[in-house]
Image 1 (cartoon, helix red, strand yellow):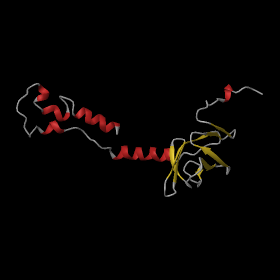
Image 2 (tube, rainbow, N blue to C red; image 1 turned 45 degrees about the vertical axis):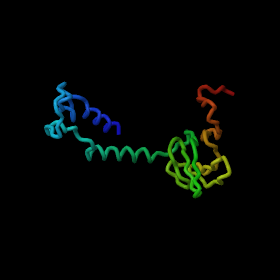
Image 3 (tube, rainbow, N blue to C red; image 1 turned 180 degrees about the horizontal axis):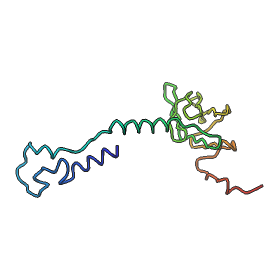
Image 4 (cartoon, rainbow, N blue to C red; image 1 turned 90 degrees about the horizontal axis):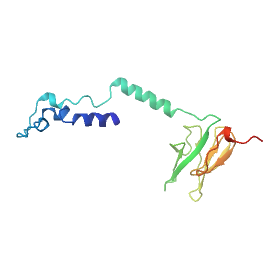
Length: 158
């Protein structure tokens, strides 16, 4: 999308692309005509080449196939419960429908009247999180969204 916007901006710069053959771009406010030289409309290729599309498809597949490791944290960023009963939760900034497992965590069916969302972890353990909470998988502790994350080096030795 950014590439397309850049090409369009360049195409409409005075003296370039579409504006290259225009009398106004040369400082000569002569009569405007519907015809312009053919080379003035060359704005370059707007779409991706087959090689670029293949590369983008590979990057999308790599991103979607990631799973959690045992050292990561799970954050429930938000949840939407539709009137149809279907639920979508945002886990670590990625949307996920209930009973799907693309990230290694399954969002289980929940009552519309509760504020917690049950999650099934890869280990088989079930946890309940509220929107904004983060679960540290290694410690088994739930942290609120407003609490600062503590790095392992900052924790006092006991």
